[in-house]
Image (tube, helix red, strand yellow):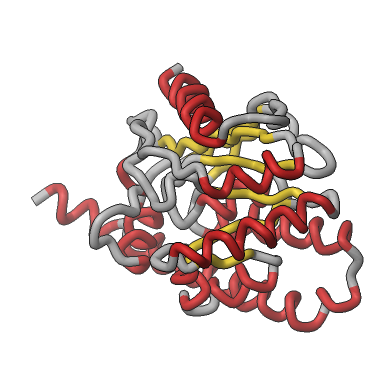
Length: 252
């Protein structure tokens, strides 16, 4: 059975990649605990960028970035494909503070690291919690920070975007902060949208890690589009506009 034989032949590579990932995560935890308290914002961002790019390399994922992150206060809006998204975006935009679902905080090791990087966590099942997070986002934006959100609210299949939730965009509108769309796509040697990174349905983190580690030639493409203004915008119309713009880029 060629498929089984091919899979078994890749077991040593998978084990090597998983071992590298575990060591890289442990190293990141040590840096977070011992170095972060003494670093300024620039130093922390440099460490975040280095660690995020290293995580991708550890599991055999390359990185290609097109476009330039907007300096200063920015709401970064990205499509959501995989647990690798934060690493790919942090490797391109290390100053970003993410808004993530609270479940991520409970992930072994990675959850602690994500929290240490300044992530804002939201309980999506609680409608009132969205208002709290919008206020926290607005405060960060007024302070000149970059905040990153996944308006789909959950991971999608890749080529097709899910509907965008407009609530979190209100933080940018209220502070008149520009929005920069970021389009994520993971390709492999044979497909423009690799199924190896799909993280949908009942897929567990362990199952997803195995698929990623066994894939051939995975590359994370981060496409940073031009920023756009938000003053006096209607959040639902803005969400639809951003979704269409990002879908067009994915289709091209």
